[in-house]
Each structure stands twice: as structure tokens, then as C-alpha cells.
Image (cartoon, rainbow, N blue to C red; front, top):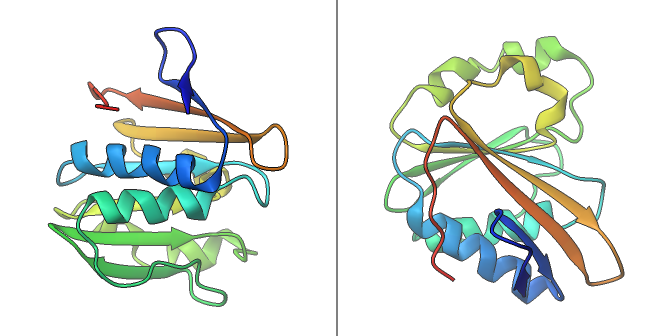
Length: 152
């Protein structure tokens, strides 16, 4: 794994690298943080979330739910994992009572966040994953209205 410049950009060379970056991020997240992930299918969003959850102390297996839009895990704080891949209509998301999740003291992780971008709070952390080669990913972490220092 290598950092690109002084930005919060990394190139990972394996799923393990991507997960390690997620673990580092999970360790510095705090109650109320929302992390919005974007990237094409197979770009490593779920692997990143597995790392974040590990960094947050989640003990159970973290997967992308196939037919469920949200799963909550117990870590040092509750972790709400939204996977919006199968979201077909915006109303489905609105009917979840998403504001309750966004405004509690847990941490919210959203895969395919671009589907609800206009509903995201201004204070958030965006993660953009771009698949370069089979196992290589370019990962950019953008904290909006949030200071973020990762210890790698």
C-alpha cells in the first residue's frame, strides 16, 4: 500500500491492503460519523467496510446483504451498514427512516452512496474506490467538515 502525495489517496495492491486501510480508518472514526463509499462493482467497497468494522471492534462477519438495505453491527459503537446496490426507488430509502440512523451516536457506512447523494449530511467522509488492475485500487478519502488523520 502506498500513499499518493500528501493527500488522503492510496494505492492498494491487494484486498488485504484495502482492508488494512479500512482498519486504520475504523480506529479513528467517532460516534456520529457517516462514511459514504462510491465505486463500481468489484472496486473493493465491501472489503473496505469489513476493515472499517474490524477497526471499530465488530466481531461478527461483515458481508454485503443481498436483499437487505441495512444491517447493524455491534462494535465500540453501533455500526449501521447500508448497501444500496439493489435500491431501485428512492422511496425505499426514505421509508427506512434513514434520518434516525444518520443522527444517532453510531457510525453509518453507505455503499453506493451516489444513489442518495443529495440526502447525505454535509459533515461526512467520502471514500472513492477506483479499480486500476485486478488487485490494485486507487482509494481517495475526502473528509467534509471533518479533520481526519490516519495512522498507517
